[in-house]
Length: 47
Image (cartoon, rainbow, N blue to C red; front, side, top):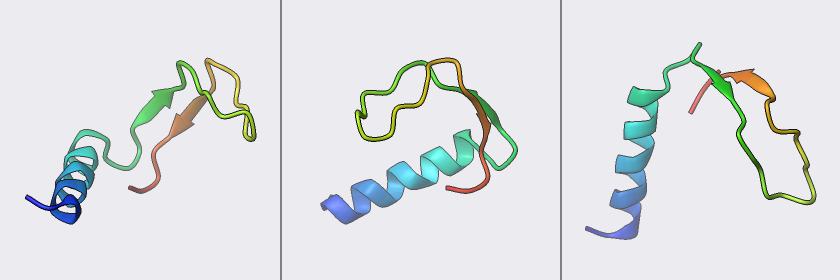
C-alpha cells in the first residue's frame, strides 16, 4: 500500500467516525502559532 492509499483510507475512516454535526472537545494542542485553550468545544462541519 502506498502513502496516498494509506491517507485515503485514514480520511474515509475519519469520515465514518466523525460525520458532520459530531460534537468534539479539544483535550490539548501543541501549536504555538495557533494556541487554542484545552476544553474548547466544536462541531464537525466537514472532513
